[in-house]
Image (cartoon, rainbow, N blue to C red; front, side):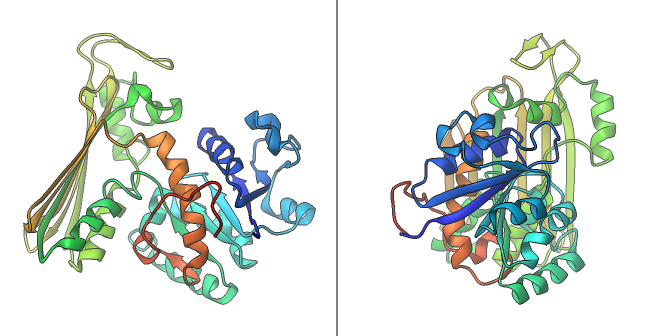
Length: 338
């Protein structure tokens, strides 16, 4: 069995967990990592992750430096930002060489929404070089877009789609708790959200992907976000939140067509949220109502989505690919052959 050679671009908390999971796969070979942090340059991935089998792979400051030292991989695992424009630019050296990219960048779930010209340009580049790039993850990438799309596979008619996600952010990593405004002044958080510097990224892209899959032409996508304010003290591993400060977010996004709400996404992500769950309601024929009690644990499942997409990405046509254009997401058996 020929192993798929991968590298990890971005060695933050998600990148480190991605490496740990990749190291468990008999069908993958990790040959290096990339991070702009000078403190990580030259260190082995074994040192950064604590995984003995990764001690032979090193960290480099750029893709070019890695390619020059260890050659070219088959796939880049990219966990370094939410912006499609920035992610395309970061991955250009790989895509030009025909190397495919699996990314957790939220805007890459539907890059044509905010960056249509870039999406076209990079699609042309990938078709020419033979590379593929796709965004994946839990949300966006599964719970609020791909999973409801899959449910409609048994539908004779779909009139609307509603997805609700309640997440206890106390169980999540520090960067996410910070991003949803934990411990901040609610007015300051509102200002940051208005400036595009806070809140959940990729919400509008999920709506756009749902509409694209359903063949609905949307007239407008509306997004709003309000802080969830603490009424009593809440302490996590990373934050000590006083009454009156923000615990997290209640974010909504709707897609309208002809004045009618066709898609509605409702995300409540805050510290100590009770009864976490994911719920999907598809109005149509038949009526579908799915509830995942406890919800899908984002940090753990995100890296699984990233690893599991690799074989399906390589089987896809070259280009800027959507999750709906690849084979149905499925677990990749660590010991299995391709």
